[in-house]
Length: 312
Image (tube, rainbow, N blue to C red):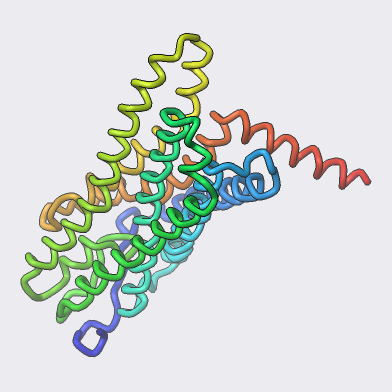
């Protein structure tokens, strides 16, 4: 791909317009990055070590947390380096690689959230058939399908973007190689490419979101039939964490990717992108640990065991 382009590297402008505030942003984003890593690793460790959490819901949460860790690793280390560096370049192939892995993990997360919605639907609306519908073989197949589909769609989109000729400007007005700021630098007609990318965006964002909405329609209908208030509260609480993550993730991603790149606004989109590249991975472990009593109890047990082993 590099041979078909005169541009051999891209300059990531990132937060260069913030001037002297960049060291402050570095400290802020570094702290958030460390919290994201520690929070998601805690979720992964607790689910792996506590046998009471070896259920489909927590299996998918573990896969999601693992994906979130790699998702942030693709973006944040380079962004942190650029905040303290004058040289903010990224090679042509490096930019394509970053976009491929970013989109791969991002799409995987979207599909996993859809699968988690289906898991909640089967658990609440089909409780007697739940062990059959969501056995470990099915769970593994669903998780693998999300990952494979995510990276196949990412490969299509990344190939479409970087097969365009880049023969002039190379300044990417973003802190990583995202679709809109990169495709705007192409010196050719991009309408067909953008149309295909938009269709992929609809498939990745709207289809799972509609599926989640339909699932929760059935879930609400079933919960309202539960006679006891305590039963309703418990059923709703198992879905609340998932719904919060879905609203933030799909809301921010849809506002950026379900529109033409001509409407790209660097300042506004950069703020929205920060939300789903930093806040959503940060929100995930916090929401599931603060709102979920099973995870809280498992964390306390793990801390207790660690304390006992240290004393020994």
